[in-house]
Length: 630
Image 1: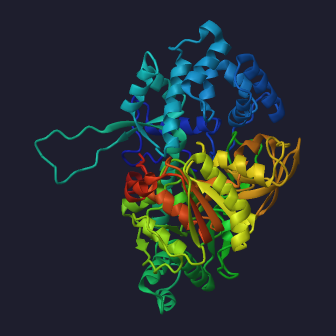
Image 2: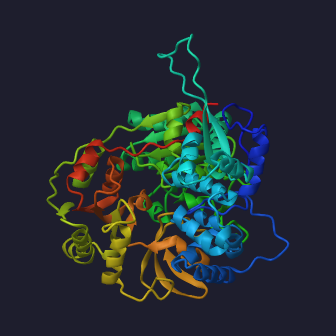
């Protein structure tokens, strides 16, 4: 990823204290190389410089954190997360600054304050500069978990006041000085209809963003502009015209955009997109264009058949992740990037709506000058699990062609239901072959029971679909009918055991909850063994050994969130829907994951129809759309 933002254009970040944007951004990039990564961080930045003193091993570091937490009365399960997030030197860092505990996902300010009192005693004061600085980053990181890459400075100051910080502006300046946060000035949108030449122009809005996401948006925007400016047609006009002959108009437009422009967007239903992707890739590769189709997971790539000429693989594998011991904790280092770009002319991403801003930045930087990038997604697809909304922002910038495929009439009950949901209607469908089954549940406990019954008995027995081809999905992790509760019940039914290997047993299905060098977010696998060396897992892409320090990035995977499952279809899907976390895009995405059979465990009551009718995905505060146009 780009280490410094593009300061040659306006509105990319204006410092408050007179320091130039380029100087602050450069300092931010340097600091971020050694900063602890948040959950699921994806980084292509260089590894930190070696330190004079050797760091403790991961095992020694975990033991030191466990000892520190035992002294402070912190729950033991938090030790593994803290060690994984803060690195082998976590114990020393936490003793020097106990509020760093806020950098561990799930820790709230009252818990960090309690820990600070246990570590520092009477020296733990509400006005401690370390507390204020940590709270600033915590607030912005918490906003990022909701998808936002920037937050109004006024909102941060108000939240600091509510948290008892005596001097909120000083706390913000401390975070800026540490280069963990960047100040960003957002110019107001020009409203031509409301323009009054006598009125005072609106003041720019002061916003704050964590450096890692601010820099990622800068890099993504610069990459999109570069690909657009350096692109030339991949084939002669006569060759493109020949490939278009006989194609429906919408598919011909998608093919033309892919071959003639540097960046293009294609929207359509999963079936229509699958046909367009295969058509574009096969046509281009058949003409000698070096082509790759990038899917969300290795499992999804097995469903794409483009012949032998085009590369079909997961985006994660295409970027060539490597196991780098010197990388920041929680980071995945990719071999492909600005210094070693793809040897490709055309890259087609099948579920580009799942790209968060960091992965998007890595992708565009890995595309060489002159390469063409085609970003595909369903209409109104859910936003990515991580911060940002790159595909929506790129489309909103109106700087690249967007082709909407004409939706072919659905031919299956699952398709009929999914398209109805996408249109805002929860309808009843005729499913003579039990392609769609609705299972009412009066309570979360009943919903979990019904889901287990469907997976272990009803679907295999009645439809002949084996358990390993059934995937349970739910909107959220927590709650009485969330993914965690479902996995607990499914493990007890399918593979009971004591959790011999850090909570896992041989035969457990697992899912990658944060990217690993071995597998992408959402990839599922099966545990085959384990021990002091780590966890042995068989993924679709091959066997892997997950080091103990990385095992916290795995979860049981009989049930997964819709965000983790997206883009990878399964023969059978059991969607367990409770009122929490529902939206029309999420429900459509969940139903669209099923290939042959869909069971809907309806535990949401009237909230399900209301969400389908009214609830769109929550808005996100981002900058990419403006940056691309500069």
